[in-house]
Length: 150
Figure 1 (cartoon, helix red, strand yellow):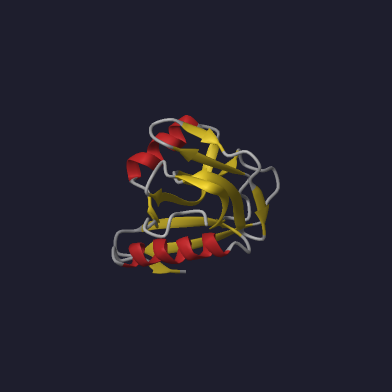
Figure 2 (cartoon, rainbow, N blue to C red):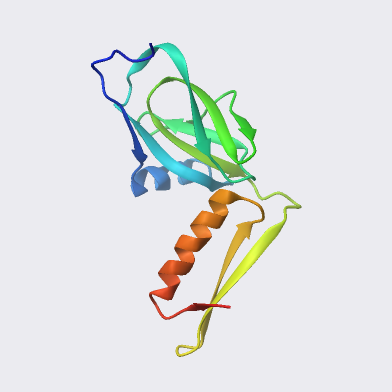
């Protein structure tokens, strides 16, 4: 077994500070999936474990942090909207897209606040389940501020 039976583990969102530090460490990258923390941190496994993370279809890099330093996870694979990595211990993980690709099909959603005469656009990668989910969340936030989807 990878973990002793008496050790509990959890997977949850990482802090906003973790995300900010990561993106500062990789200035030519964009977030392409959730920033997650696997706990308890720095618990090493008897055998490596495979972690599958939902990712944007444009994802091409996974990074990990055990503290303040972020480094690329070697051997990450990307298949149909998922990032697959092998880990030897729990840590914080983030899926990234390194630099904007030249050609990638995009969708644009528009929300308008007619009273305030404002317009917001939300850009997403076409056919990406994760981008679609985040778009729905963003449009719900905008609706609370008087925006309607066009």
